[in-house]
Length: 482
Image (cartoon, rainbow, N blue to C red; front, side, top):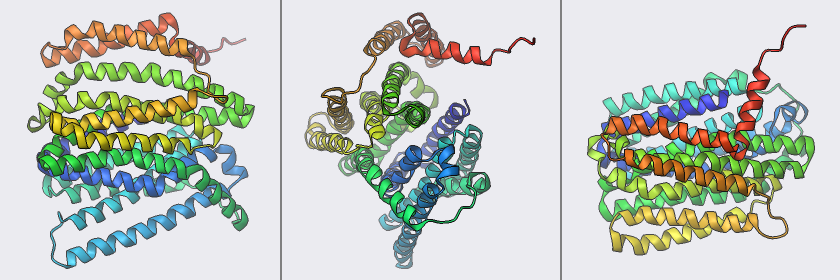
């Protein structure tokens, strides 16, 4: 429960901070900020994501005590990469500023993005360690401290020094400081170093993580290239429109998916530790049904409330393009969520992660073709279409690999079809509310959609969610004395 609370807090404050920064910077400056942020995410993925993934897969409460070299290997790898990145960024950015260039120069923004990548990597790695230990309280504290620092620092810098690189650095520094504040509870007990074990663990991490890094890097490269393309074709103002819609949509949909993945994948790892590979793969199948059952109605509901959301919370300078871009991006973001949280775990639990690279490469290729063809036909909206098509292609090819052949994973198709039918019924019922004034549309659509879909889930026990809820309530019920 603490993990869910942490993610709700994280999603809410990230949403607010993104809108506030967009308002304070304006479309053109926010376009620069968003492009630099996407670059920081790409760098973080390429350099540090393998550490987070390895912590999620190989670290646990038992490993913390019995195999301390796992954590030692992760810590040492992060320290080496972080120091190298910080040194290069300071050298590159310092030489540029020494040459008399302004803070908004391309070199300064690139150096700032590299420093932010280090902060993101530090936070994500330690957050993964806390989750792998099933220490929800520590994870909640870490997320809370990070979000408070991020909100205060980024909004203050955007208000007093509205330069994209300064706002970007404030966000990265906040993530690193949150880890420093909680460094004591995040530590493991001291243990002697075993050089042979450390070498073995590094090889294990690289073999497991490199394919996932390559795939995740390609997925993160899509929005970066698309923002760069739209800025090149239509200017940074149009890039700002596109970026705000993409950020709001991805955070609205991706946050729930990530929260589910953090809980569900650890259950699969735990099942493998105690019951073997077959139990883990059975859990992966159940997890996939839960992901579909919760992500699909969220995507449909988000599309319904887009006009109301725009009128109520989106800065006025971004209105109009926001709904257009977000509506086109939603299908692709839903496909990306299924790829990351329902299909990738199949290959992660098997430690055969090479297929995810092929899927990501196909998605990048489809996106690239779309960038060449679609903007000529429909204008800047073609960039959003290219992104959604690329993500859909990647999901389809990975689904074929996971769901066919001798080693195919077994999915509860009845639950997936039931979730699709329930989401369609919810969408049909909410459509008449879409043209209403913003407050009425949002105030009626959200509770009505939740109640309608939850009722169908309860009636048909879609993805076993009713069973899970009843068991949790039963376990919390007080036991009579005597």
